[in-house]
Image 1 (cartoon, one colour):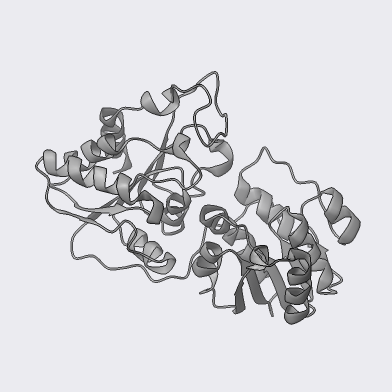
Image 2 (cartoon, one colour):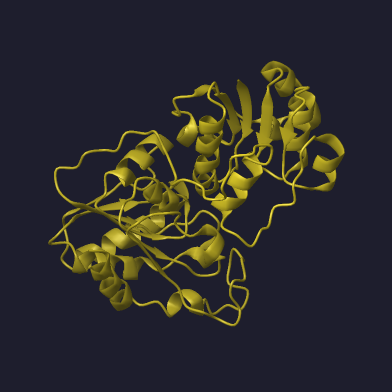
Length: 323
C-alpha cells in the first residue's frame, strides 16, 4: 500500500509525527511510505525501513510555486492514502494534484474544499496526539494512545558517559536559556561526564560562549560540535548521550526518541503540547508567568523573566532526580 506523508517543516515537529507514522505502518500491513518535507525533516525520517522515497520539497524556491507543486505531484503519482501534517495550502494542493482519492489533512478552508478527509483536531492536546489522531482518522482500531517517538538512525557509541548541552532553539531567542548557565550546569557534572556542546549553524556563537565559560570555570573535558553536524550525525550524537540538558527544541525531541535522560528548559511555549513525549526519564523546568505562554520568538515585554527566573542551581538540583 503506497502512502504519501507530507512531513512538518521543523525537526522537532517531524520527530513528533513519528508515532503517527508507526501507527500507520502497524495498521496497514503492506504500507510503503513516500516522505515529502523540509531538508531537516527528510534527513531525520528517511531511514524508516518502510520508506521507499524521501523528497525534499523545494517548491517554495520556484518562480511559480503553484506550477512547481503541480509538477511535483505528477512526479509522485497516485497513492492509496495521502496524509499531510502541514496545514498549508500548497501541501493541500500537492495532495489534490496527485489524484489520490483518500486524502487527509487538518480542517481548513482549502483542505475542506479539495480533500476527502478534513477532521477538526483539538489543538489543546499534545502535538503527538494531534498528528496521530489525524493519521488514524479513517481507521477503526486507534485507541487514542500513541506509541513513543521513533527514529531509525543508529546511536553513536561514546567511550565515556557523555553530557549533551543544547543551548539553541531555532524558533527564536525567547526559547533560549543562557550560555553561562548551561556552562555552570555542565561544570557541576564535568567529573562524571564528558561534555558535548551542540548547536546549529546559526548557534555557533552561543556554543562558543558556553565553551569560553567552561574554560573560565576550569573545565577542559568538552568538545564543541556546534555547526559541525548534519541531521544524521546530530541525531546519532544526541542518541549516544547519557544525559541531555536542552531548551525546548528539535534536539530535545530527538533525545526523547532515544529515551535519553533529559532536563528540558521551557519559557514562552505551550509545554503541554510540545514537551518530551513518553520519555521515562525527563524533567521539565519552567516558571509560570502571567504573560506565558506568549509563543513569541522574542520576549515582547523585554524582560525574558520566564527564562531569567530559572537558575543553574535549580537545574543542577533537578538532574539528581533523574537517577
